[in-house]
Length: 113
Image 1: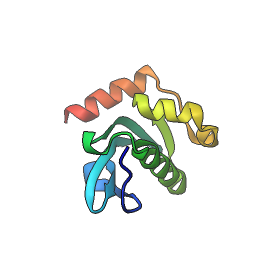
Image 2: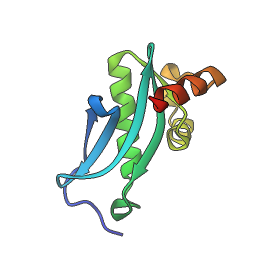
Image 3: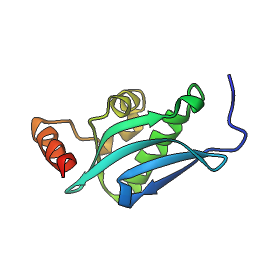
């Protein structure tokens, strides 16, 4: 298994509604969101195949959720990976809202724009 040679760096790219993780200056993956009122609704996470198996998705999502906490927003985990991460990491339970039909309908409309 290959390991990244440099520490991965996560940054929020607000104009693209996502957080990106970079390794050695190369984008290795992203987690996408849309903001709704005081919530950050995460709907997709991906890691490029060339970087698979290095734990980068976990690093990416943890840093993104820490940023959400800092911003005062709440998390809505529509993305299956984010939902799975949250089940294992109870430290984010206090800022997590459930996925509701209303959120899903809103997200579908937001993504269609």
